[in-house]
Amino acid sequence: MNKSGSLTVVGTGFRASGQITKEAESAIDQAEKLFHLVQDIVTHHWLEERNASAESLVDSYRHGRPRRETYSEIVVRILAPVRAGKRTCAAFYGHPGVFVMPA
Image 1 (cartoon, helix red, strand yellow):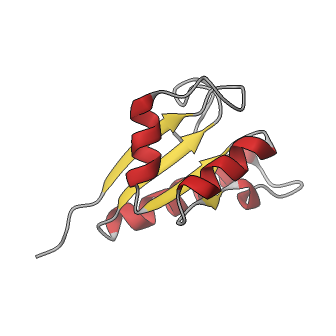
Image 2: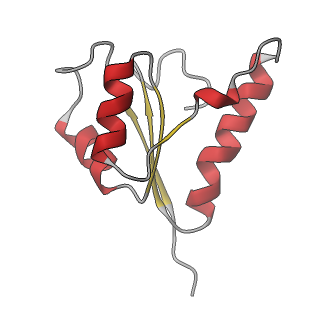
């Protein structure tokens, strides 16, 4: 029997601390695979310290590459562990429902 994967998308806010909910923290901590795309190094390190499976998505961006291609790659990367049955979390800076196409 295949294990069902899951995806939780969370926002980290715009500042390095104080704008993340307890629910988002819990999803980050409990994820079997954590992806993140954040704007500051403090939040990047905080996420990497909270979850050993953390992986930045920033390397999907390439100079001259159309944004749609970048976003498509991000979606494929995020969904791969979900499809493999893992509890997955994607953390984006700000609010994940505002101007975050891959979310």
